[in-house]
Length: 402
Ligand SMILES: NC(=O)c1ccc[n+]([C@@H]2O[C@H](COP(=O)([O-])OP(=O)(O)OC[C@H]3O[C@@H](n4cnc5c(N)ncnc54)[C@H](OP(=O)(O)O)[C@@H]3O)[C@@H](O)[C@H]2O)c1
Image (cartoon, rainbow, N blue to C red):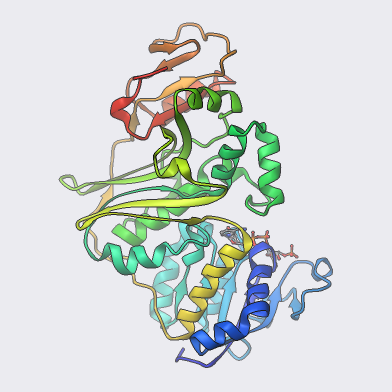
């Protein structure tokens, strides 16, 4: 696609993000045009049920082929979610010459390499700024700028729902209330399972790792513990010793072995830690590179913030921009041994002392394990309802208090 002044956009999906894209263009079209020289025109949106959107303000269709046609739309924005039919539609769009902007980390985590290769072959753009950290400009500064020199580690809060819920539970809401509030505010997916289990953060981590190091990792290969076992009672115990808990996605390069180790785990950290201060659904990423340490922080979810990132991709793609390709022949691979780490396993103040725990006692119903795999900890938790496992962001201090 050559640079265009008027750009026709087909929206696949008119939910939280799709409607917010339409709203941004409706309310700020002249501003965007004045700044960018691009008139972004929505030609229509694909939905399952048009009756649900009587005031859409743009033509709605249930037939994807109405929009997957380069004679109708120059760029397709995929904001359906899930793997199918998103994969089929993104593939069809690029096959016949449309560029694609997507916010869908799930389809990218499983099929990102094939889709990037298709985009390259067809000479179109596949842009996905909104798929990681929602509205925070993260991929562009990371991939176009920071990753120009070697990246040694990434540590990030990548799931806005869990961050919002951990904050809400610290304020006294129980788990179900915190989840309902996140859903009401549009921060949680309709099916929040992937957020709570940590899988959503895993998908984003897998995507980052592929783009930064060229390592193709299946999401199933990443050790993960979500926040399901965390309760206001456990978080209150952490708070009493000055710690807050965040769901942290980590990728650490072992340069001598040429391996990268990945994990997504609840981590306790001091209140002065950057991640501890994250508000609402905010996300943050800390990147260690050959030239120094960098942090990026901003909204990780929410319709308007995410739509903003979609818009940024639209403007760049309309100007002929192609996102950087992931390294094709990187020497880095996934570490063969599973991640091991010390965990605190603990219940609330009133939890009964579990019997026969072989680990170092820290306080009542609170133990410090030796280095364990995530699978070993998950197995113990499955037999001890009411208990949670938390690691330290700075593990050398683990067990120092309690
Ligand atoms: N919400 C956020 O804060 C956020 C943040 C970052 C990234 N994302 C990503 O953005 C994408 C969209 O999220 P969302 O929150 O906007 O989702 P959503 O509110 O559930 O909206 C999905 C839209 O897609 C339509 N749709 C779904 N399946 C369809 C199908 N098979 N055929 C036709 N239409 C279909 C739905 O149609 P109906 O209206 O008829 O139901 C709805 O309009 C996801 O990949 C999500 O992970 C979201």
